[in-house]
Amino acid sequence: MELEIKLFSDLKRYAPGSKNVFSISITSGATVDDALKALKVPEDVPKVTILNGRRADTNTIIEPQSILVVFSSVSGG
Image (cartoon, rainbow, N blue to C red; front, side, top):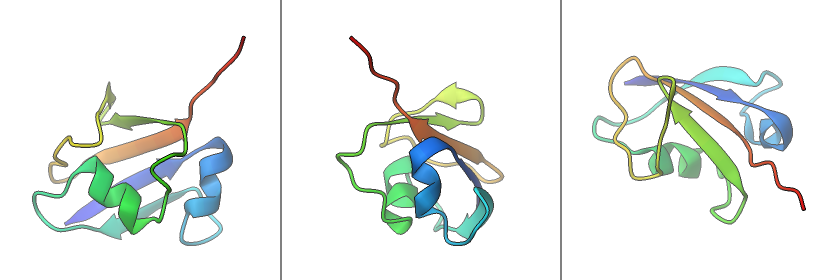
């Protein structure tokens, strides 16, 4: 199935092309973590994942026609 992905801030470098909005093919039952691994986003990179407008853990299963938005976590002190 196709998954639309939107990468923002520093995570744009993991896009497969020059655009930060694109689609990839994933298997049915894939998780957010599976999608991030397909893009080669390191696990230790701080990030926020939003699936269909809601915060999603990496073990959240992706439903058909989903949109995954990923951006860098903001930190401060």
